[in-house]
Amino acid sequence: MWNLTPVQDIYNIAGQQKSFPTSPPGHYEYLSEGKGLLIQDANWWPDLTTSAEKIINLWQEIAAQSPYLDHNRDIAGIIFVNLDLIESLLEQIGPIQLPDYESAIDSQNFAQLARADRLNFFAGSTEKANFLNHSKVAIENRLSQLNFKENQALINVLFDNLENKNIQIYSRDKELEKIWQKHNFAGQMLRKNLNNFYFYSVESNVGINKANRLVEREFHFYQNDEQIEQIRIKFSNKNQKPLNINTNPDLNTADHLSYVNFQRLYFAPEIKIKQIQLIDENGKAETIDFLSQAYFQENQEFLEISFLLLITEQEQLDLVIDLENNSKQQDLEVQKQSGIKEIPIYFYQNQDLVDNWTLTRDRLE
Image 1 (cartoon, one colour):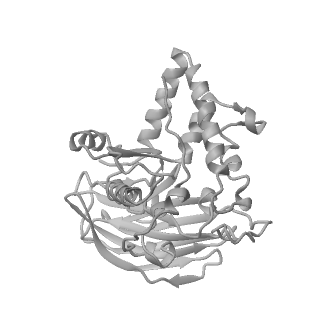
Image 2 (spheres, one colour; image 1 turned 30 degrees about the horizontal axis):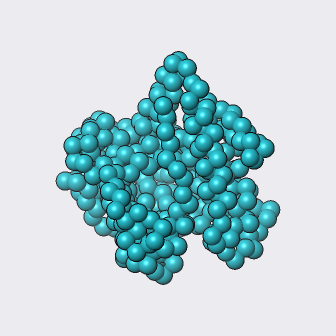
Image 3 (tube, rainbow, N blue to C red; image 1 turned 90 degrees about the vertical axis):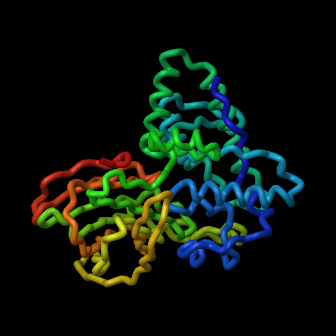
């Protein structure tokens, strides 16, 4: 029997938040609303453990003073899922009819239907939660009808989503957490071989829109004499300019589909960044400023580079990172950000393309 948790709108909980911890860089400037860390945006850190603990602590603080939340609830952990998981689930078992909505949900329309009345949003609205709960009940009913073969196929879908990070698990029980980490299900940052070149790109859409759904990216690594000296990230924003402009004062969203990305890049601590440039479609280059600092996760240290990146509708940009890299690397380790389906990878030796593949899960050696 598949049992799914009831759905709540995070903004119902966020509306009861009274205490706001200090926001980290990037979050403070673009998402804090001048207050601090908001629970709806607390899944911010590049490692899941930090985000999960922040979310649990905020929830407990809100519940302690709220008459609507159970402050005695003991939270054992959090399971993080992406929209991609729901879409892959519906691809396997859908379409599923929603009688109360006179429509069927499937992998192609679920996101659109969930946001269909977004422009009619008002404070206290329950439309989104109602739609998601109706969908949950319908999905549960369909799951209860699956035969053995269909259940086996569904389990394979869930394992695939664990591996590609559409499902990530955090447990406060240290022994359970070790199990999730062992199988790389815990969303941790990890360098497995310190002789390899490590790279992890973390994007955060701070533009208050859903532009990231239609943004594509490629990673190009350039190596000379066994040293990676340059990385190019090619971004392409496939969104069209919206036909309807939001005029709803209660709806905190942008009136454009430009991708406003607070970009963070993670390297081994010994790497140094010479410069970062943006090159537009006409070949015009612009040097951009960035923040550089150490980032620690578990017992490992990383170099964090961060900056704001704007990609307008129908625009393509090349992000060029020039490195000072004095170590010879055996191989390339790349971690994939949760929520990004796939990233084409191209590897060059002395400017010649020698390898390429598609990153769908962490590549750690």
